[in-house]
Length: 183
Image (cartoon, rainbow, N blue to C red):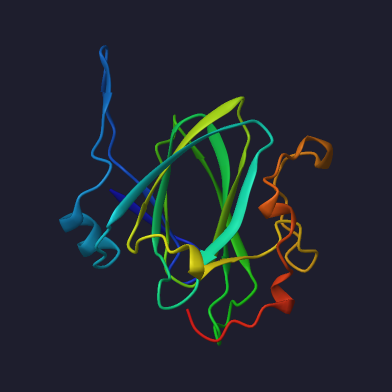
């Protein structure tokens, strides 16, 4: 696998080795041994999958301590703009975000460690999105940042009139109004 570092410490893009021929392709989407050697040790405990249509924005979500989650995300089919916002108290990149396009064709994966709010926008007609988490979901530890926080100024690459949000994602606060003491 090829590891691509981003400008924000801890966030990495992973490009697996894809073997293709007339039958199609094969790649190893995860190896605990190789991941630990290249990125660091992480024990994933939960796999999730979602299916969404064009214009959907999911996020920007995180889990509060002591249930903060690291995630390894990828697209099975379709395309998303995947976004991670640094919300680690004291981080030199606090409030900054990094985004990457993940597609079923490029097979890229994005590792988001604890201390980041995460979300994605669906750029294709439909997407199947998978993610591994190193902590179980705890509803009482839910946290989120407004997808349209003007201080973040994220370009989700979806026209405003086409954005589709859950009712919950319409009501999240700006990052500046959150009290984040630890992640």
